[in-house]
Amino acid sequence: MQDIIDRFAHTIRDAAARKAPLRIRGGGTKDFYGAALHGDLLDTRAYTGIVDHEPTELVVTARAGTPLAEIESTLRRHGQMLAFEPPRYGEGATVGGCIAAGLSGPRRPYAGSARDFVLGVRILDGKGTALKFGGQVMKNVAGYDVSRLMVGAMGTLGLLTEISLKVLPLPPAEITLQQECSPQAALTLMSTWAGKPYPVTATCHSRDRLYVRLSGAEPAVRAARQKLGGEEAANGTTFWDEVRDHKLALFATTEALWRVSLKSTAPPLEQGGERLIEWNGALRWIAGGVEPAALRAAAAATGGHATLFRGEDKAAGVFHPLPAAMLKLHRRLKDTFDPQGILNVGRMYPDF
Image (cartoon, rainbow, N blue to C red):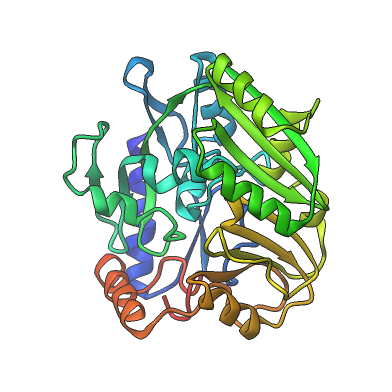
């Protein structure tokens, strides 16, 4: 596999010498996310395979082009999982793309985000230099923040080549409950549940129906099931897979789809059309009918931010505008890791 790394490094060095942009891409399942890219394609899928899996240590290390499905299948055979439930959005999703995008699924508020489970990474920077940060155990903190910095950087700081992730055991018992209620009533219930020792691992409100997943030891799940009420959903596992991979009806919209992160206790937003609520109320999806500046102002007023997750017209910018100080920090990081400005230029913000 070293020959593939050498080829990647040569491609980056050549592009840097010519100041020619490169478009880093794995399975392409998240091509819609972020601003439009340009430049020569650097496809990571050839660099594939699980490098190491220590079931007793709860760690897996894989090359960036490894399909997520392959990693999850391997973990499941050992009774383990990627606890942040990374979205796939397609069969070709790779672990490199998963970490570069930094997206997490329904379990995120309860188990942690993708960033929380990254132990270490190997990358090629914008000069084609191979760098390693972090390790394979939580106590190894050398370069730990740099490893996490790569999560959600959208490939703008370097080409991820290898990732070490902490994994968790599969829960011994799991059920999904559902009940009809309004968005405000759902937010109230989710807030109440968050303050109780219930084994809640996912919440979702869609089309006047609230869903909650309970996971853990069977006695705890059974006791919580009695207290929370509602009906048990027969297709619970399938439902959360559809939430994770955006296969519910709202996500099929042809209109702009907005992802709004804010305080879980914030009231329902007035902007937009159809909505879906996740993460105890901290994540709101809005389809269509949105004036970008008004939505972002409403989100900022509650300490949150709004991202144009998917849409044809990206003139207002995909990601929430950064404060001047934060923008300056982003530019300094870009200049440090990619001095010629060639890696996924413009994917997050103009010119970097």
